[in-house]
Length: 291
Length: 291
Image (cartoon, chains in turn purple, brown):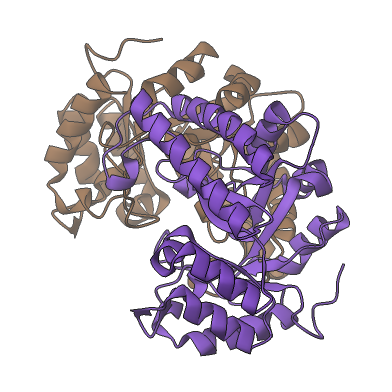
């Protein structure tokens, strides 16, 4: 297992972590500058932030700072109520793949979606098996395009508390079942993004990480689970402030040969109220001490 | 699958559902009276409510109304930081078994606990594997006492969002693994309480219900998952108001031979503000129409 204590060479910042500073939106170029100024070597940007700043401008700024990407957030949200909706989702995912290619992202992270309408408070249907079929079919179609573009797809299993609205793939085992079905040859074109927040509770985690192996482990995300958690989406903790044994999970991942970045992704109303420089400095400190 | 539409013979009310009426605590005897007045034939009372009213008085009232029990809530909370704490938890669980026996409950529901201190906001340690070992050992010891008392133990897998503080057993598969380890003979002394709220999201649910079989399916609880869910503990929905396909899950359970009550257990700040009679009437209606 790599020693992170001496530097932050393998730290990546998911840009959602500092998408606000002192409660105000922080544009992506400013985030990239702040990361580069601290010797942070990698980031994982979000599509909406990229679009707001302009794709080519972002690509240029990333190159100017010699930043690497640890991923691109995000594709997915495949389910829909009709053929038109399914096609629109697929088209949008193809654009996400193309953007990821232009940014030279090592993978496109997929938050696959679940019951259509649930995120808006009113699910159009309650058969999660249908959503799962739509997700499988959507990934299967997208995979052809992604292979041609040279962008691996990383399915991110989300915590089961998001099963209704954000993702109907809620365990690493389920994500790997899908990988095995759609990419039995373990070609590297399809794998998982493993976020400790979503999977730390799983009694089969160690076993399934071993099953994933290096070919399927495309990204590793960290934050922490707070007790109590007061908001199901935006109360994620800074590493070390919660109950997740992050080094243990990182050890399992690295035992499979994973040698990529440890990406900090914290959605937090609390941290978004702080100055982004303070947050980034603390991410570096915690990366070295508790990840 | 049984037809529930014509009557509410198989409805049970978990008394937490109406533990408050119009925002005020409702004593257990009043809950029992209100259930009996509506032809509700079964209840599942909570220990704190029983203690407040007096065990023998409650037992007497249950008999006077010819009420059945569908379970007794609850034992568990096994993990601790030292031997004294583990022993205290075990002693308390033995008392819960004895109370369940006096009330002629068909099972004692176990919410097994997890990281000690997490429920109070500060976990004493973050090794969930240790908590899981303590839970296994605790159930193993309690099982001897429960067998003698003739009270089956029903492990309730809780939703993974409770993994830090309330239960480190978060899938039906994990609960059944434990049952198989501690009661390989499927004697009927150890099984599960299946609450749709905790397990509806699980892609292996149908498969694991089949694995459980009649011997292990000791209780069946219903409510609904709301979108959005605004509180991780007390924002459970009335059946039909959320996204859980309850009849489908009940079908899987009954296909294994389960023929017990369908127990309504709703923790809800919202419903606790309403009059308990209104809530009970709606439970009856929804039991007949959407369960």
